[in-house]
Structure formats: structure tokens, C-alpha cells
Amino acid sequence: MKRLLLLGIALIGSLLHTRANALKIDKTFVALHIPIDTSDVKNGFNNLFLASVNGANGARLNPRAISFVQDFMVHNRQDMEEMKSWGRPYFNLIDGILNQYGLPSQLKYLAVIESNLKPTALSWAGAVGPWQLMPATARLLGLKVNHKVDERKNYYKSTKAAAIYLRDLYAELGDWLLVIAAYNGGTGHVYSAMRKSHSKDFWNLQYYLPAESRNHVKKFIGTQYTFEGQGSVTTLTKDEATDQLSGSSMYVFNRKLNKDEEAAAKTLTVSGKYISTVISKYILMDEMEFNRYNPDFDKVMASANNSYDLKLPSDKMDLFVSNKYQILNESVQRLLANEGTDNEIKSVAHK
Image (cartoon, rainbow, N blue to C red; front, side, top):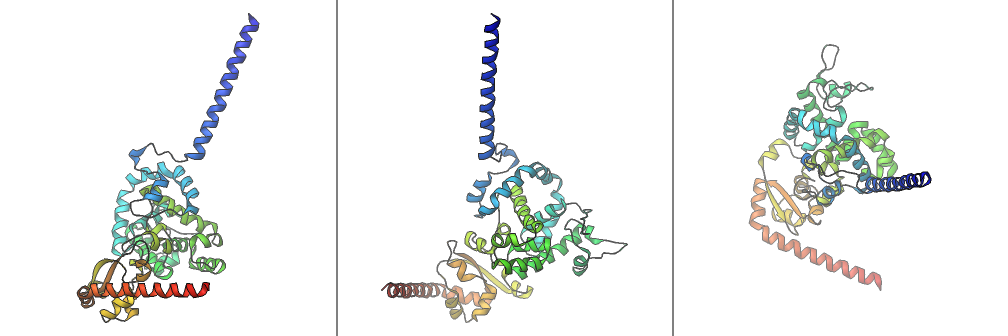
């Protein structure tokens, strides 16, 4: 009887051990294949991959960022969910100022990774405030920094200074991922990485940047995905934005217009096979001047998302509207002629 009891205990122990191993395997499988818990939909966090591929605005997460962003979302989700509530006044203030400077509202997430939105934040290097500005940079941007007052801690003034800085960095670099890298480590490191990698694409030059700057960019992307469930023009390289996004989001920041020109211009969304040289001819406008108003026009119109917010001086827009069908017809004819020439060249090349 005692022997049977011991045998029964051993058998139960074996079964429990087997079940435990099975559960362990199941948990490992889940950890490997479903790293993000999407069951808590009330918090508004979409599945990362669905957001990447089918995001409402068309922005897709670069494959080289997926692993980092996954881990970032897992480890920071709760804190950032709480920040959505207590940080609302700060976000509203930042949004208003970024809008004044024509900047994407998503740049507010830079203040999240810089300081956790804390105006009293102080770095080991001496950067202070929600935007972590260094003393010399802050002074160049018009802030008072001395032993009596430090306007880097003033939310309104420091945000205006950061907006000016971000605007100027984008005017120089023309790519939001490079702007975030330069904001952290300076433009010198970005230009050095460009030379060493022979590329202006962040994903190609990233390992020539200091690790802190490289990860800063990925933290920024991860923060935006955590808050919004998808990316935007600020999580894409310039080429990615041109390929993926429609409308003005990828080229509006490259327009070199002063306030008077901007105020006097008219905007019209166009789609179709328009060519800049044909438009310039019909509206009697210098091609370089047309490109200043409408950067990357031909590149965007040749992409899958061939929609563009055409901006022209008022009198030139009137000419475009009056001749738009002739312009489109001639543009199409030129494209067909070019395709024919290309085919002839290919045919000769293969003989």
C-alpha cells in the first residue's frame, strides 16, 4: 500500500512537471511572437504592426526600427499613458507654439524624451529645462541665462526658442530624423556620419553617430508610436516621407517663402501627370522660382501618392487654373514621348 502511495505521488509529480514545462514553453512562445499586449484597447494603443502597415496617415515604421520600438513601448507604456493626462496643459501649450512656427505637432514628443516634460530637469552636461537647452545655445536663441534668471525653465519662452532651433535645423538638414539627431548631438556629428557612411539616410548613417544620438532618434520614434499608435512625417526620412505620404506633409517645410509671399500665395491640390517645366511655361514663371514655391514637385507627382498642394503667387495661380487642362495634356504627351525614347534606347542597348 505504501509502495502504491509513493508510486501515485511520483506519477502526480511527473504530470505536474510535464504541465509546468508545457506552460513554460507556452509562455516562451507568447513572449517571442506576441511581444506587445494589445488586449487593453481602452488605452488607445494600436497593434504596432497594424499601425505601421495600415496607419491612417500612411506612414510605415522602418523595419530597422521595429525591434527597438517594440521594446520601448513595452517598457514605457504605463508612464506615458499617465503622462497623457497630467501632461495635457504642457502639450496644449507646445502644440500652439509649434503651429505658430509651421512645425509638426509631433515634435512635442522631443520634450518628453528630453526632460519628461519637467521644467526643472538638469542634465549632467548642464542642459536645463523641458527642452534641455545648453547655456550657449539658449542665449543664441534669445533666452536669458545668468546667475539671477534662467529662462530655459520658462515653459513658454523655452518652447519658442526650441521651435526656432528646430525650424533652423530642418532648414539646414531637410530631414526630421537628422534634425532629432542633431538636436541631441549637434550638426557636426551628423555631417561626420554623412561623410563616413556616404549617405544622408538616417538608417544608413546611424552607426556613425554617437550611441546616445542614435538611440535618441529611436526613442523619439518610440514615444510617438506609444502616444499615437502610428508614425508621421517626423518618424520618416525625407525619402520615406516622399514615397509614403500624400498631401503637403513631406514638402511643405522645404518651401523658402517669406511671410509676405506666403500670405499672397494661393494653394490648390492637384493630382495627375503634371510636369513642373510645362506648368512654368504656361504661367510665365521661372522654373527655379516655381521650385522654390513647390519643392520636390516632379518627384512627388511621379510617386504612387501623386497629389500635391500646389502653391503659387495669386496671378500665377489664376493662369494655372485657366490653362490647367492644356498643361495636363502637354505634360502627359511629354511623358509618353520620354517613355518612347527610353524604350528605343533600351531596344538599341539590347541589340
